[in-house]
Image 1 (cartoon, rainbow, N blue to C red):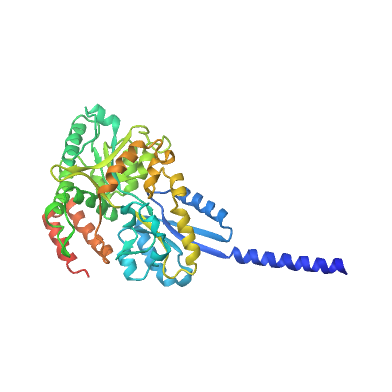
Image 2 (cartoon, helix red, strand yellow; image 1 turned 180 degrees about the vertical axis):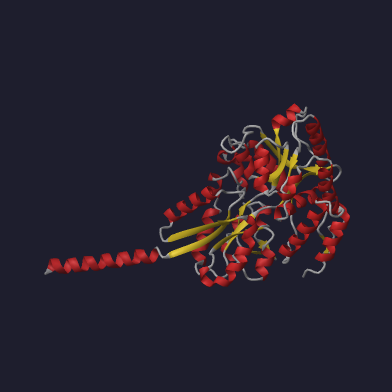
Length: 415
């Protein structure tokens, strides 16, 4: 009887333990990421597997979509109740809209104040709106000037261009020597990509998007930026297919050795120098995007991204634990080949710097001059307007001045 009683107690305890384990394993997070630039899908899946191993009560379903679909996916999920996403990747230009519409949870109180000075200011702007934080910065990124070192040497140049006018001069020599039919390639398809390249040039020309709340991208440096873009096409120096390209197209063309210069995100440095991914491995150099004589010494766009918790998530604490893990310095230093860390002290860690010293040196200059796209709640609508009219100028359907005048007229209606 005592044995049967003991067995009964043992079985009951076992059932309770199994039930408790089942309850622990029931927390499932749905996380939304993008499938291009910065961390690769394999990177994110590996990070997630390590997180799950350290947190056996949490499982994470990861979903990857192109950047162009990311914003609308987040917006659409708002109506999905607690069946939507628990963690989402968002761009630096969306916090104003998402905060205003209640799409993201204000996590200001969850963030340790001591982290403020440990992370780059440019990274914090990614998740901040009206002094409130709506996530943790994760991807600290800007566009760099990539150049084919061998092609420049054959053309007689020892160093990459320091100004945009110098870039056009070097490109002309490269074209005249028959080293490349179209020496420059950009991501100027009618998408957010063209706005990022445009913003880089606006910063270089010391231009403005708004002045005292009024759109002014039809004047000064903002107009000069479009003129430069059109001029590079008219001179036959920019690949005309750039008007259809996104970032991966730029990487393909540059890595095939078809261009001397390309503007792209951090991730291209490793891939352009990878023999499995590139025909010019070992020949791809990187530098800050150029400046403009008498105005700037370098240029850059703030292309950083953050991780946040949607307002309708049913697992906010678990989601924050996952976000905290992904954005931790240890994890970021481990995966620093395609995306540089948000942490200031990481840049003295050999795990981050070894093998990519030139990228880190370029980042040291570029990250300090990152120019922001407008932080307005109607950014998506504004971007669509700019995309349309910049594209009209690039296609020669209107002059840069006409195109940007029309863009300003449309932008004045936005509220």
